Length: 219
Image (cartoon, rainbow, N blue to C red; front, side, top):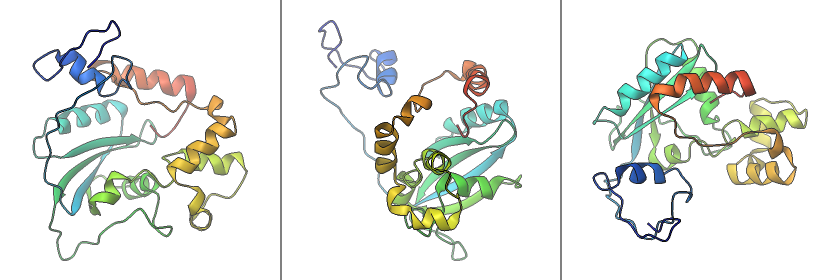
């Protein structure tokens, strides 16, 4: 990496670990990365996704922290729909699915939007829900609908938001198109679309601040 003062440094888990971990989400603000060494893993056909319902922000943080320490998992992320409803999603790469399992997809116009699907699956469920998702569709699971940006477009144009209208307007409801429209319309000034790295120790306080200050859901 080339730092702001011109120094050329190497960062790894053992050498300058704070820079190594911080730079991954800093969008170049900590320095310019000029050389990467990447450890690859074997890709598999599916991701076995498990949706774990949580009923408070503190529970969501605890569950996320616990699952990130599980070496058997390949993916961990989460969605907060409200203070009382969240989902921690864990993923495991696999080539095999049970004969009774149905493959869940998210890329076709007839498929559900990922975050709405997860919300519906977990709203009244206290037990984990398991689905098998093709790897490429898992990696781009938020593309259709652009997370909540697509829903805000319907609200902006006062247009009905339902399965039929999402299907009918599908060509316009992918992330690249939505974010172009968000900036071109000037509506980006009314939203906060930001990835942040927050320590587990202060995550609950930060989420409470975000809710009280902006009222944006889901997170």
